[in-house]
Image (cartoon, rainbow, N blue to C red):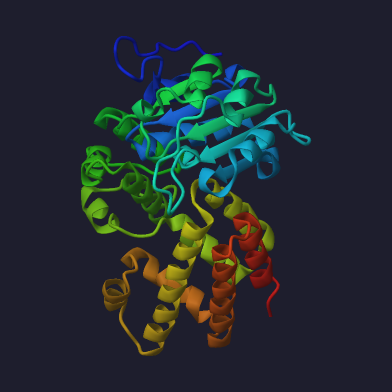
Length: 362
């Protein structure tokens, strides 16, 4: 396992490794059997999780050997059993458990919080983890001090890695921005990376969305992205991955690509959250179709429907290729999927069924 320098002293996160250090040191052949992530930075938690996914399981096997569970929707024992299940075909599998604190939250209507158990299924698993599973546990709300005394924390300290996901510094974020841009074939004018970090105001998730939008807009071989273009392009909008997913699903009806992208999105998002974003964007597309029929100009469309100006032309082509009847069918299918999710249906299966229904439509 990679050698890191853990925190020392009286800090209650003693033994935890800073997330930035983990990102630099992760190696596919030296992974720990388990990682426990907590801290203030959702961006850092996301980066460490994404990096683990990238190196833990070969790309060809990720659709079947990477699984996400939400602690509020499963029993802890079921999560432990899943972690102990050998991979099928792939040399290794990864299990991501989000919102770990839900295992210790008091149930709705309960008058007292749950007492800290003397032992628990995941703690027992961590004392003898599967050599073919990388278990990633993410505490979204609870910090490390809140886990002190819990058997999961004790076991994680013994067999896994505690990752302190603190807010990254400007230098780290600026470097990440430049790496992302270069990987996409984009050039950034001097000062643009730092400007993006400043405009994000410490919100790393928004920063990631802004970088994705610029990548979508710019394209390889374009001139350097300027500070003026950053001001035009950045803002509070839905990540472009959602737009690409909608385009593939609702217009191209390419089931293979849509299912693949769905799997990627579900790794980061709760099924109901993803459904809500899909429904919200569908409503925008319906409004855009009406606006195009009434002859609205792109500037008005962008302002009134809240669509980024640089996406208006592309999405106009989308709605022009989609009939009113088709929109009605899709809205009905979304409503059925929502009802099933709220009844407790399996999120992945419900949304996969929705994808297949849409792609099989006439």
